[in-house]
Length: 521
Image 1 (cartoon, rainbow, N blue to C red):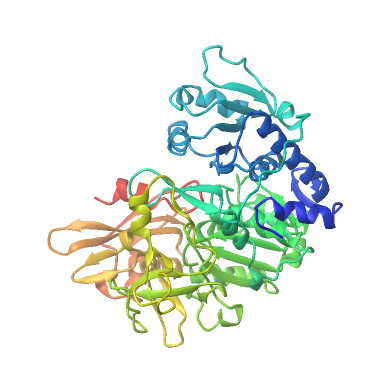
Image 2 (image 1 turned 120 degrees about the horizontal axis):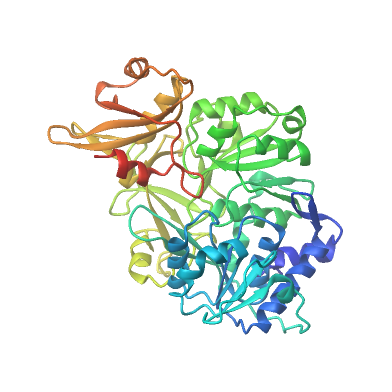
């Protein structure tokens, strides 16, 4: 019975030990070999003194050792903290201190950058270095440095700890809109539930490209669903858009999930016929897919099934749009996944009427996480029951109040509007930035677009659009003229900022917070 994250690997290793599990560059490891590696790493962690519930951070780019370090933590009874390799030392230091990480797994290059920051992380006792060690251990350091090979070659087989599906398995740090990143706590049951997405139809024949960071809920999910199905996971560290079609062709990738800004970057690449022929489905998450990008993807992959999905780290997977509905409602995020109820509600928790804007709330099911690490106040604010829902006389069932704005249509399909703190209020109107951005994309003149609200004494706010153009020679007036023909004047940007490219956060989404800081005044 699968009660722990590592059981996804262990079960497949027993039944199909010779099937390919994971590939990175030129190395492929079977399920049997990968499980042996994971079990060895778990024993090494135990020899370092790791006990049930302690935190192990993995600060590495994607590679097979990263997978073994993550699943080894689960097998050792610890909670793993996957840290985005693009983060700066001060950001990593906050994460390590916040959840009192005891063991850090990283590379020699990253350790060199982290030396000063680690001095202020008193809980760290051990650093495990993957790859060649290019420096000597500092004699004054409070922690001991170990080579990866030393840890994984532990001679002592530690007894397997008893782990419940309610035990803490993973802490994923999400930046949110204000303040420092907060750690979302996922139980083993949550992690296993993310691997059960039957609508995608994953089988052992699938080859899944893991392009998103493992520190991002959607990226982490690509591994869990691949291992749950016995599929083959292809690891890639995204550098250039052209890398994606090349790897898809090389490995015969059948499934890809990306955030919309990443699809925007890669859809116009040259896709080899092998890549087009093998792809069975493509999926998007983390916000609405621009219609123009979806249309291009369907042209490139006419035989692939599109899945438009919505989720949040606090509940991983909430909705998906039935592919049969894509032609009728391409801008919808669909309906709730089979194991959940997703509502659009008013502030008092009552359900909104069709067409009435409200807050998206994920109610019930196995995906709702344990809350925020060491932050009961924010947990109580975000995780709370919906008045009037649940069994009469029974205990109140928790829900996740997302902070996202949405509406439903007469048939119950949900349409994502945007984050509550993204909304632009001008001339008495509430404007969704994504609606303005959608129109900008439809002109064919811009590659990237983010709409911001700028304070205005008369209007409250006015709309400023930050874009990266498709062509070097860009006519701002032409863009505004095209937009005026499609939307009311109060929605038309009063100013346009032109950049070569728009900044993205470590998860590949547009960095709206940075853009608002630089251009929102």
